[in-house]
Amino acid sequence: MIDLKRLTRGHGGADAMVRAASEWGFFQVTNHEVSRELMEKMRREQARLFRLPFETKEKAGLLNGSYRWGNPTATSLRHLSWSEAFHVPLATIFDDDYHDFGDLTSLRGVMQEVAEAMSRVANTVAEVLAAKLQTTRTGHGAGVAAATGCDETTCFLRLNRYPTCPFPAETFGMVPHTDSDFLTVLCQDEVGGLQLMKDSRWVAVKPRPDALIVNIGDLFQAWSNNRYKSVEHKVVANAKTDRLSVAYFLCPSYGSLIGTCGEPSPYRAFTFGEYRKRVQEDVRRTGKKIGLLNFLRHSPVQ
Ligand SMILES: O=C(O)CCC(=O)C(=O)O
Ligand SMILES: [Fe+2]
Image (cartoon, rainbow, N blue to C red; front, side, top):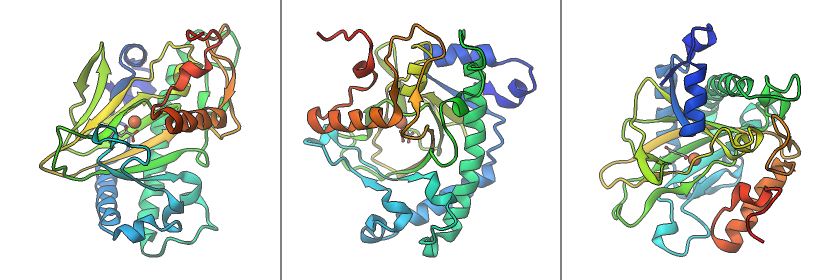
């Protein structure tokens, strides 16, 4: 648990954050200035959005066609995520020319506020973690998000809903995965269900109403030369109740080159666009994301 206010005032906590990012890939932050009132407002808007009829949610115009449900490549219940989500590019909600919000105008306002607040958390954390890496290139240790081309037009806000599930033993709320971004900031409700992989075991992340969860994504693992870990996580399905969560994904533009905090890097240079394309191709072809292994300079698979 990292107190962000103490950290930004220089009262310590950075080493604990570095340890958590290296050993767990996950940690929680408090005193993050994303107010409880704002998150309650978000939850009410989210619940209202998901109550809309399926046909309305699926309409391409609604939040830029960002509606997702189930898993299009699933061939059995084990591959299925028992959830629905809006994976919204922030460019959509901040674009003044994008007027197709209809009844969702209040949702847009709340999403903008949440995105701004979570983005501050993501950037603060990214900079503290970047500054702690041994860098060979001067000026590269700070401003990792800026250096790698992340801004409010390239990031995403994802609204997740996990409906009550009639067969929770056979399916996941969200299938095990790593995040394909730099860093994720997550706010979960009181239901619980998020689990992360540690030493080959699943560990539950207990909900704490005052805390946000931060996890390292694949790009930060690559940029940090594997010092910080992008760790597999999943959501278990729940037989009794629905669950909501909101995730902010710190992402660069598709054309941004994901470099390294210092040579030699185990990975070859690649763009975020290339990475995403490769992930999508692998999922389509094999049903599984291969991820960073594809970009190792010396492939273990010959
Ligand atoms: O809902 C959660 O707790 C996790 C969501 C997640 O892992 C994701 O959206 O990538
Ligand atoms: Fe995730």
